[in-house]
Length: 288
Image (tube, rainbow, N blue to C red):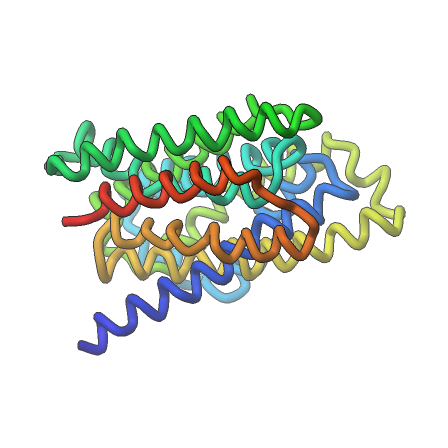
């Protein structure tokens, strides 16, 4: 019973943390480029995790490091840059709604590559989710001509990366502690992220006040929204299932939407319908 209650507590905490991540990305992009933001997010998280979890690296067997590297790429490295690039063109609330397709993609990839079984309602969920996504993107493109909605495809790719990550962790890293997995992930990414940051021109503009302010937003995003959140997420995967863990994305758009309202973002009525259809599709795809 305690484990059942605990998984819902983790789910709620993650929805609040990750739901706030999209507005932090938006604020960070005011002074930073997408590649600077993505790199700083990874570096801050890596430093934090190595400080608290360095000793846990010894618990990772040598043969599992290849899966640590894989999950670091799919679960953090690629999505960190894709979300930052996407939000240079689309609203944070739209980005969060499209991210809610992660459970649906988890199901599809799980069935195709990891041996999970489809149910009829889950197939309907996949189709409904795709319809809702198309409605959300197409209507947004019509009513927001100043935004390039082709960039929404980057969010969809990121959600597929997250789905791949979840299935890999459940299948190949289930015996490791969440702290070991998370710290291992970010230790692998520290060098490539630092290299990208070095060549991004960041150190030429670090003295600018606007940039310094943006760095503070990304510090919060890196430590809380990436480091701590990943530990909670991996623990949730281990104590539940991949589809339940990724159902956190039902709640993320709600949190992100209210942050968006405070920052003067607004969906069109048709986009609201599209968002609702997406969530119905995700619900059906996750329902047993």
